[in-house]
Image (cartoon, rainbow, N blue to C red; front, side, top):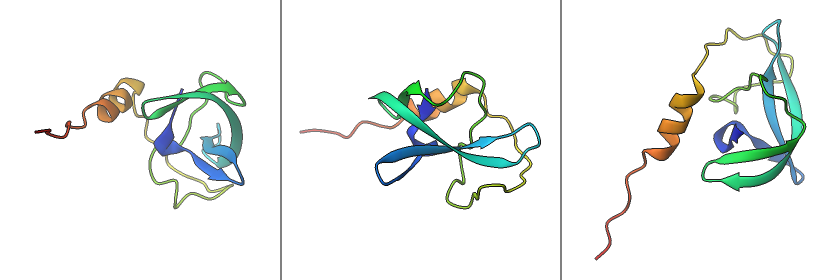
Length: 89
């Protein structure tokens, strides 16, 4: 799964920024199979264990060197599911 917040689209194709072993960013396209809440289920293009940029993608550039901090997957799931429901009358 990839958080929708971590993705961007160009000409109907979906991309993320991957963090390489050298901490350089690389743009990587993927094919989403479906969407579940705020996440894409991946059909192809990304592998389990790929490190993706979760926040700040509008400032990211291909080849940029970063100092990543790891965010546990569980915290991403909790943040996405804690939105307050709207009241109805």
